[in-house]
Length: 472
Image (cartoon, rainbow, N blue to C red; front, top):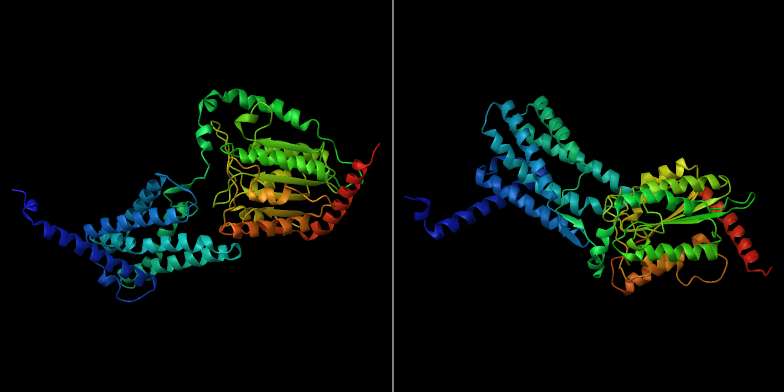
């Protein structure tokens, strides 16, 4: 006879409601433990039902919270892998703890206590820490880790009846076991983008015609065609060299923006004969070098050899999608290309022996590039703060909001970099306010030595433009 089937439906429902109520009380006890309140552990109800309910609550919170903080969220099952690894670590730690106490029943007890507090650690790390201003971000994470370890020690100390050496051992084991996950984001969502329907066009038969081997081997020819015409700087003149990097082929706006920006910079800032474009797009595979990490390194190395290190300035314009962990998307399906990190750009510029740098990054979260790139010889402008998104990444657009504010309808007057950049930042701010968008908060950094260098560069650009306008 099925005894469970003989239980009334009402009894089953009341039992389930009771378990949820107990889970709520357990979570409340978890909050009390985070505040180092006494007698919280004794009030936690330990059972297999509670363990699985708390585990489910933790996973559900991760799904909801990570969705709320992810722009244009696209579901990603990889979050299950992180959840599984976290559970495995908790099982191992609970096993070790039970061995230390000599009571196998403590294994389940530690698991339940762990999942009473983990949801709140997750909530704090995903809703508070990631939105801290960049100035306080490192300090915030250090304080958070110190607090989490103190909670772990406090729990272990109570369960081990005040045995401090064993409590320290448990805390250090938990730290060492969790360290490999420290730089991974527990999220069930990836950032998607509002492509306005262009992705359907991108996924047509054209992409299946891409001969990957031919594309890779063709880069040598395309790079030679792009780099060989680059003229060296003129001795005694502060020359400007331009490199444009449009890295995401899923939207044509990045290709168009690089084309427009390069044309404007050639015409208005005198980079004609000293400019190179790298682009990822199906339309340019046979004519333009890929915007890949390797090609960017090669291009900067070659241009660096043409520049006078003490006089000339690089103008590097990067446009693509950006991620919350401050990487620049590099997409050219079906090719598998490496994303660009701030440290990569710095390394390439250093290796190319390029001292004077003007770097513009048009991407979400691009403010996160500044810390790695800043020095006394650099001017850096980003489309957004390190924790903010930027706008205008639609397939039909000619520019992103950032690129449009900077380079569309430029006034016909002597160019002053800082003044023009500040005006563009204000234009973006006013446009976002008008469209009721969350402010992107573009970031500007100017190195001390770069301030004086810009005056010399602007004078030489103005002189070159006057000479160019005069009839022969």
